Length: 325
Image 1 (cartoon, helix red, strand yellow):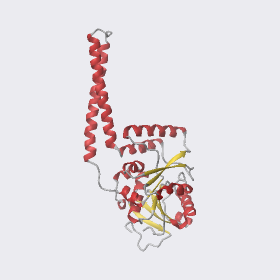
Image 2 (spheres, one colour):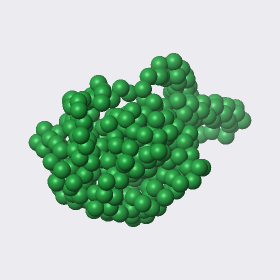
Image 3 (cartoon, helix red, strand yellow):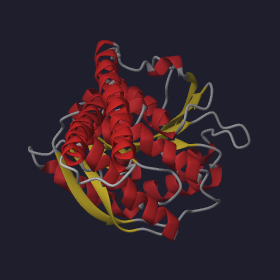
Image 4 (cartoon, helix red, strand yellow):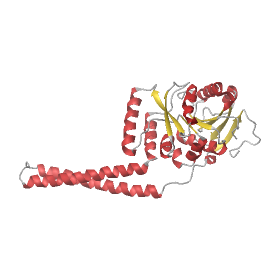
């Protein structure tokens, strides 16, 4: 149950990060007092399992969703949003943010301000500055361009976002949400507003996301638009196949009129034939995979209750604190 007195509901995933999350709870409470209700999703932590002590020390109202196992950052957010969509009130706004301090609590009011407009459903944070390594910045710049090419969409934001209750309920009904939150927001057709914000430094500890994890996260973002990606790959393959045929015909013409050196014609024609066969097969495969993806699309929403072991509350009285309350 989420109190009607709370104006903002914050959803934050936590994994083995008790110290940082406790500091976040304190800063949120200092910023919004009893206007905020915090939903912390403990993503199957083993070394530092999350309980309500951090919320209680901060004097915060909130709930800790303890998951049965580790499901990953994006699915943890999806579970939190599913829980909030079921228990929130229509006049409440929802904020999604990380618990490590890189999403700054003092910038929340700036992020949420555009929600007052009837033309905005979701406000997403675009980073004006990043405290990252050069390798990460290069990788991220390349990723954004590849994402634009293969999906036809531009992605320039992460998980730090604010949304209205109607947007939360729409996203919670999308199975893509558990794969990649930002891509699901793009696919939802909700009206977006971009808000430039600075990125903060971690409160404590080190990031648990390595380069392989970041690459996987990026590929998952493209998976949300699997049909678009497959169609674009198919079109590119078909175009290369057509160019191979044209090149082969040009080689035959040059050979016929005597403008080819010894051995050149057979090598060139062989390479072009191989290119045609490979790209032709790839084009057919992508078309078939597109049909498989379309026919096998999951239509049911994620049931957050399947993943929650228990729900612990802080700052409110609940007669029966269970996952259905």
